[in-house]
Length: 553
Image (cartoon, rainbow, N blue to C red; front, side, top):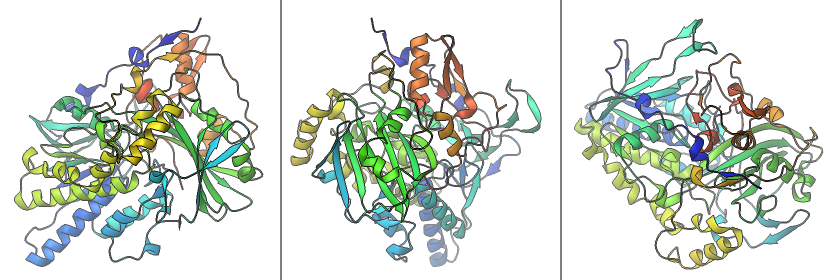
């Protein structure tokens, strides 16, 4: 008889009381006017826009605003090291931010010249018409690692101070106001004892803290919980596993697929993009509300590559990089009812700005950062940083193309909660009616509340040429985590063998193993994809330099 369980019953709560730090900053704290947490497109776009506005104002007023210190704190040891996306990007917000540049001067690889969409069975691929939201005419293929490195250079040219190797573990608050952040200490051994290399946490104060942590941001979660900020639906997620391949022949078009190797009650699909002449990006995305406890996203992806559609492109080539990341998929109804407060705003993926039907989010992230910058600029001129002043950001977002786009597709991802075929029909009707069908909101539950049912194992043995083990994947991610680091994962002790096995299947990096029916955690393997935080042990930030070192993901 199959055993069932809900992941939420085996998860520790978010340690919000440790993240919301109600104590004065340290005596040696570093002061900025504005601090962005995370160096993704949202934060870097926001920092660039703010620096430009300040420069223009000072030139116009003879320096009336004065010197404004803008900082960006990134947990990775180098910019782009923890960034991963498909990615096909809508260029509009980049052109708005850099009107002086031509399109071929922006950090994109190539325009989308042709695209194909397939429905897959185990052996065959059936080409289908491209769904309207997935039409990529006018969009550009890019490496998000390279995009963020380019943006960071542009920010630094404008005087923004970008700091790498600064993971943030908490928000400094005074009464109801966020006044800064606290970074994570480094140099602790496996048991948490200080080593000779120990560095204590640092406090960084700011008039405004901007949370651009990316998907499943820990600080954003804690702030929303502390403030009691809700959303009509909870945020739901997907896990994407991706590889870069050097191929023998070029791929001249963008590929998306649905169907195999996913079952009809599992949401997701694949992508394959030509990043360079003989470099291909390929990946599989799986909604984390699946019910099969034995579903293994990494090995499902490896199995997918054996399909003739992908094999003929990859075979004889070389896998260059591997990585994984979660994606917020809830859409319009999962956006928090408030994204600002006293001394704080939330931007990008941390706010949930992703449109699943079009598979887009990077341009929303950049644009949200720019909207935040305009609000903060106005606040700096008034020298007021309270909730009322910063709520102008919420107004800007609600009236922006971001919200307009997400409103049109508000129920489209949610329609697939009952399976691929019913969801496909509903999604078609939603497209035809501009989102008016079915009327109202399709209610969702958190991914960790979805029932998981144990099934029979379907062992997959990688060949090391086309398909790879999790250990080989982690190696190709450039993971540089110290083996003796303390565990950053907050797990419930003594979970059942079924739950332990679910964790082992879930994690693409092999963090979890089942040894003699018990859970073993290999924390240094973690690549910070955040899947564990959604369904298993809680994720917390580690010391600087930990995690993957992506180059072109």
